[in-house]
Image 1 (cartoon, rainbow, N blue to C red):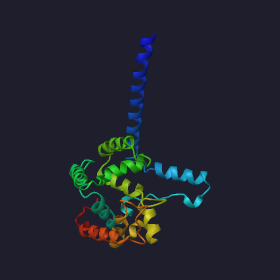
Image 2: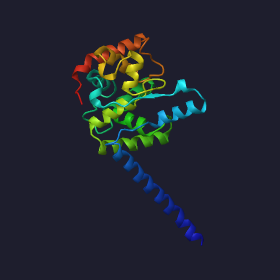
Image 3: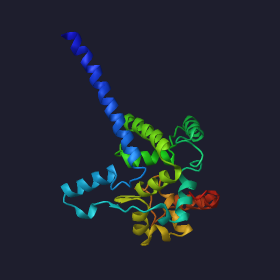
Image 4: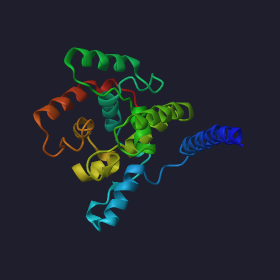
Length: 229
């Protein structure tokens, strides 16, 4: 009897893992063709606003096809966030090595997340900082690189990335910061909007600090070299 119980637990765990694997495969495969109606973070923020009865804090999320997003913004995002995006397979090992070297020299940890990794995070996972979420992010990154092409990954990123408190995606951000559609953004506006992406809850588009102005200038210098996916 005891031996049967011993064998039941590994079988149950294996069954659970296989079901979880199948579910995540279905998730990623389906989203190759279906635009997500909501992201985990948007759903969480929306529920919080309902529970606390604060409709003014409900997040804004508007999906747009890639062709409805300014080419300037598409190039600015590549220039700022992941210049090797068209050529890597989800992980930029050169950037990871640079981040490690920087930590050894200056004892400062800087991000080395690719657009693919950020997309996996924003589309499938809640915001948190722990080892389990990081492992899930890596796992989903592998899957989306297998199932989606670069055009789809970038489209997902532009529509689901956190662009400030209550603002998700390029369309919502363009309307909040410049009162226009994402398609109408100028080269200057696109670079400025992209400059805050590493920390959109701290940095401001409307009141850019000298650091953001410098970041914007650096982005504009290399935007023209980025491919239009």
